[in-house]
Amino acid sequence: MAAQDLCENLLSKVKSSNLNFVVRETPYSVCIKVRKSFVKTTNNHNHDLELKLNDEIGNNLQMAAKDLCENLLSKVKSSNLNFVVRETPYSVCIKVRKSFVKTTNNHNHDLLKLNDEIGNNLQNNYDKLKSSYDDLMNKYNDLVEEFEEMKTKMKKENSEKNKLIDRMMKKKYNV
Image (cartoon, rainbow, N blue to C red; front, top):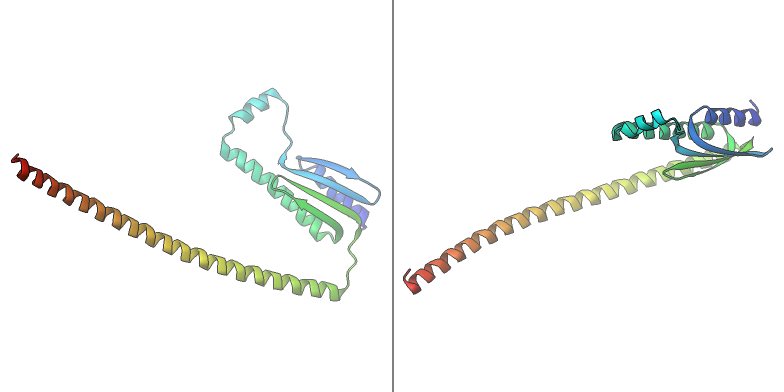
């Protein structure tokens, strides 16, 4: 399949997705900006219905829109086309060149090796952070327990002190 055909296929998927999008196309590239939300209808009946939707349904729609965006991104990444992606929590901007990536097997092997190294480094960093987090949580829990013990001890000592003060006052004023 030609690069031009792949771009047209991606563009048709975006247009049929019911997501909010804007497309800018040149003879050499396609720039697609996709919002991670569905197109809203302007029908008053639907508007009233949308107002009545609870948060769970709204969250499900938002997740479905995000899933569609992720699906689109995976298609772009697996297409072997030249592309650049800029992603925010609310939108994805994809610029696709109407040409295939030119690589050699050596280059691919080096990239895969580098990718594995980065993945291993990320996993190691995650493990270290998780361990540090667990240690901090244990220390925090110990401090909370110690604080509660001290609070209980202070209440007991204050109670005893108040009792002693009452006895002294009774003795002194013969109450």
